[in-house]
Image (cartoon, rainbow, N blue to C red; front, side):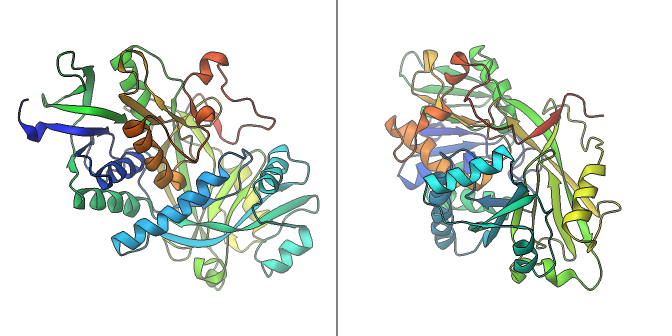
Length: 411
């Protein structure tokens, strides 16, 4: 090392959606940026690939609504710069028992944030969706306009292309093994498994399911971020009813509160199939995944039969995919300085707990703000500090149940 080609203002470690959005932001601000990815670019081994992710503004935690609103605007700005779309808008429908604490918290959050919503009962849901969807008599639904589907692999590619267009250097198959402070010049030296090393004034770690391993190898500190493997299922719509559930036919993205927490999207990526999955999975080592762990689908099949009035074939999924979540104990993000010997020169973005993708444009903005200025406007970062786990190992205290269900064993 010594060539200017190995020296950067910012080095971003991890080329998934968060790292790519961050590299785009730092490059856009005129910083010489390096994005390092341990696998091939656009790989399918982590959390940023696949056919669809949802966006919704309805959260039990009231501190996410403004982040989603900003993200929805930033998605459109970035699409405009790229010249193509990755985000298709739909309504969002949240449903569950009328006394469910999480759903009640969603309503309270909407009210606090002046986020427009409608509460629908059993009959109103049936009328609104013309017999395509049904909820039990003792359930309610919350309907909002801010929903939609994001194409994840296409979105990662978009951020990487725009970062590259603005001068960022992208290098794949570069597994980072260590980060050390340069005691002579200041800044950071990043070492890879291939023997390459790069100098950067600042560094951002967005390593997804590998964040805990990397931070531990660099600092010896155990971040409470646990990888989880999850499966996504697609179900066949019965013949003659396919058009009723397409994204062009006003069918919403949706979530069902309770046990299990279930979510889904309109028919889009595979003609004649609709995505309906359980928000949960099995704890895993990201380097030794079971790859598609077995799961009892009886409760999901029962839910589909009841909500979709027999219009879907729920005998077995038509297609299955898998990815990973990076879970924190409270299901809130980690957006903070690494601290210790690295002070504010290394920033961590991780623990997105299966619900961060939709917010990636604003998370990229926040991480770029933190690493370049030491602060981030427009967001209350106290909810995302690493230090919250020192005060309480469970993190942020909430008055409702966790949304993600998980098993210790994949079998």
